[in-house]
Length: 68
Image 1: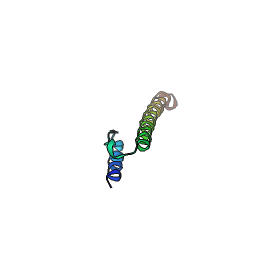
Image 2: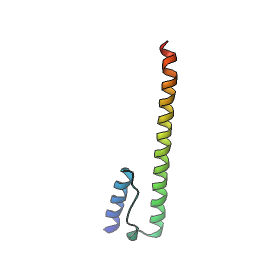
Image 3: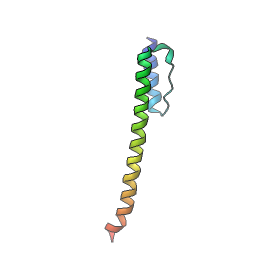
Image 4: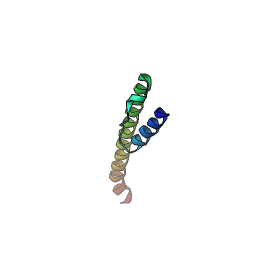
């Protein structure tokens, strides 16, 4: 099934940071759903990175005070 192989490739690409996929074998609704999914994944990755950076900065700023 070309759509299934295409979906697997799209999922593989999304985990590597690339959200490119061949859209021709998907229905319009599937295309919209995939775009929304990839947008949500990108947003969650960005939020996760921001939270990690914030936690790291907090640990750096709180660390020396607790060690004194």
